[in-house]
Length: 392
Ligand code: HEM
Image (cartoon, rainbow, N blue to C red; front, top):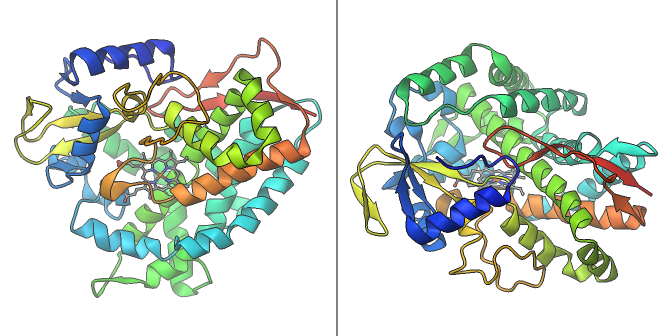
């Protein structure tokens, strides 16, 4: 079985390298197919008709109520209209116009960090993208603190075995019946009802009144789409902001180079995303019998797409383990590929760049205290939970 993705360890990278070499498509003991090479992952992600994103393809037991309206698990043709609707809040212009707010929010957070040692995740990596996405959606600022608790609980939830219908159904029941997801859903549904009664100038109001192909989205779909944007909109960015601090600490020479030439920052961010993608793998579900790289995969199989492996594939990247901010081109797949390509990539790039520029502006020296333990989430995300930091 694959090693844990928890801390992007050398053990994981070694295993992925061996698999790319010896078994580029691997059926594990519970019957999940894993795909490792960059080229093969492109094939999978570019064929949504064969490789569905909806687990109901293989397990009808998962209730549609749980996922309807979520972009990442919606297949064509519904995916296109949903993405169009969601795109109303994420036009390139709107995202670009948001940059001054990202700067303001980030400046405020950095101004408030305590003197001496503090937790970078608590004080910056989590609240920065959470406040930005909340503002974009129309979620009141005072409610954003609740997300940390929900996120912690969601990330602490063990992801069920996607090949086991009983486990998936049990997890779905938990998600609907109580716990963090149900709380979050109830919160967003209440907000939808408020905006339906009285529209404001925000994304949730637009969504509850929007029409897709002549039909209104149901409240459940609006809530699920908002939850997806909310979670996807900050959890991954929080992880990358954490990786950024860890990278600066590990590579002081890169930190010095970036401080001296800020023009290099965007390329450094791409390299960080390549080297340490926060979502190291994601799942697809086959609709028909198919094959990848000569290996037959039957219909109704779970296929695990290893972004972390694609990003370290020596067929595409020379010396893939080396962190090289001058890598060009850098065709990493940290934001996915194909129709489900990350919806918030432009926003995420702005948030990370602004964070780094302001950290450099405000502090001459940013360091993790020697010997500090970095704690990682035990989940499918590759993300640090706490990062002790001293900034002067
Ligand atoms: C560095 C930060 C981020 C990373 C690494 C990341 C990564 C990804 C990846 C790998 C996918 C594709 C999943 C798949 O194909 O199954 C994806 C999709 C998505 N991302 Fe992101 N994401 C980030 C930030 C964001 C932000 C800021 C937002 C929201 C504003 C967002 C919203 C979404 C949505 C809605 C989808 C689903 C798109 C679709 O299915 O059409 N992400 N992201």
